[in-house]
Amino acid sequence: MCKVLKYPRSTYYDKHKEKPGNKWKTLNKKLREDILTIYNNSNKIYGAPKIRKELMKMGYETISIKRVQRHMKKLGIRSIVVKKYRPQSTKKVYEEGENLLNRDFTTTKINEKWVADITYIPVQKDGWTYLASILDLHTQKIVGYSFSKTMDTSLVLKALDNAITTQKPSKGLIIHSDRGSQYTSKEYRETVESKQFKLSYSAKGCPYDNACIESFHAILKKECVYLNTFIDHNHAKLILFQYIEGFYNRKRIHSSINYMTPDEYENLCRVA
Image: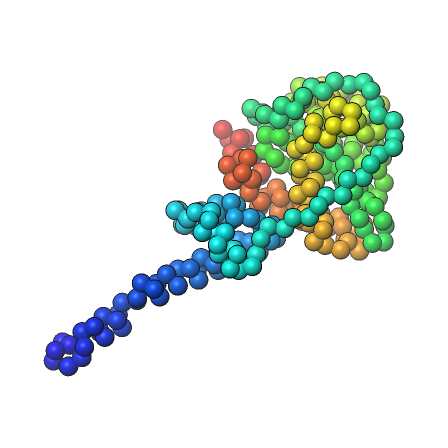
């Protein structure tokens, strides 16, 4: 046909076949679009390892972390990192209670070991507000939490009640916390023991004994609190709910649970 029409064969094939250089440009453009979508959907907190895992789910089976890093650099994006604020307490430390956890964060099933802690949340109209959280070490899921303007025993009791209601744990569950007055109060201790759960406490002045829940609160600050300006208590409560229930538990993947979300992993454990 080319000979009859006096049309150069090379020109004909150029028109019908994309050049290798252009093909790679098209593929890299699509890759950067997918990277940017994953990054934005993660509230701009995913780094290269997690973006790579999400890309693999989308069909990029052989993509390397270095390739993802190169394209992230070209896009000018990176995981958000902000230093955590650590308040100091002047209250007398509770001396009783064993450290049953003893930094053994390994588990074999859900609702075997929970860790609990309180963190401070700044709010424009209300000053400091307080979030009590409980995390299941097996799934990395926040199984219960409570947000309040006051940091008293009712704050941690509400978080505990929320966790028990949703998870329905069996007796023998270990609940670990630091030695803050809320967790060492008679009311809290009696509530935990009445359910036949086991109390565990960190050593005095040793945050590493409760590293997992400390890590969650650091993530919460970096990925939510420091990215928002909370007008009042109700505004902060809504944003925290959206982050914990809408994103952290149901959308945020974790390397420690094979890059699944806490909710996905819990569901898998329940049907196993």
